Image 1 (cartoon, rainbow, N blue to C red):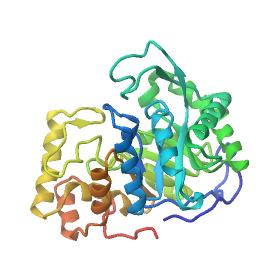
Image 2: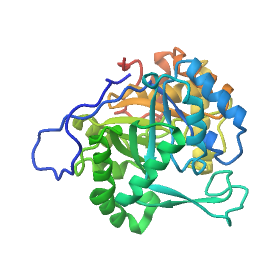
Image 3: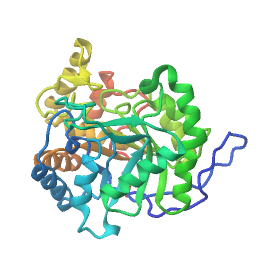
Image 4: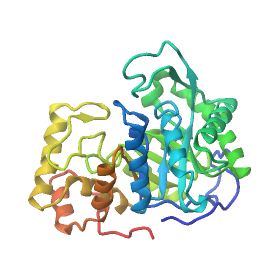
Length: 356
């Protein structure tokens, strides 16, 4: 776990100018976090009883950090999480959610899968304005039944999401969204603020320009790929910005214990991707290792990485993730993966200092 409790000054915009790095908020999170996008009906419906059973089992097995967002099921994941945590002592869990989208009713949204989630009657709209941040956060607190959260991430800024609009979005994030989030931290409504993104480049754009406490990076520092994230992780380490790795199974590619999945980056995996994944599976199988265990444990070897969050939708997936996190893996596995070019030469590998 990382250190508990907020400290230091509220994060005001920074434009470089000096080598002194600011004191930052720290929050207590477990090494393994429960990602709630799947119980927000990601791609397919999950029954209420199944979702609640998964959350209850996670608590029983010691998971104490839950990551969610308004976008996940257009509020469904937050409502389900709020119901599961209602009877838990508030000091016994940490929760992160996100701003950057607002959820609105839309009677015309009747597709089986709407915006990636099996929900109807609503839509998610990007809104990085001060008012949008406030409205999204207040709505999240209502759905969660809470008066504060430990971490608030700004969701999906970056060129990958916004294309040609990236410069305008980045400017609004710096001028409006992030200062509004810093104000919430100053008021005690959140303990730490950061960004939750799928690309390393925008992290490097923002770290010198705003005093972030943490970053959630999805899919870019995994057993399958590391190259784009290594420079960013060193920058985060230098600045004292905590990094949480999401998407450790590479969008389902490395989630199955027996063979590669068919998706990568939320799209159908191409032939080259599948060939590389099969090589990972072959090496792990020859060492008697579940690929998922290697996928969950690898990111934590980097000193900038404080936790890994995996999406879970069932009791079986929760139990699997906990068991994978605890499995003892042979050191020769990492040597073989490096020799095969699967793990970058510069990437640290377990056994390494685990955070306690």
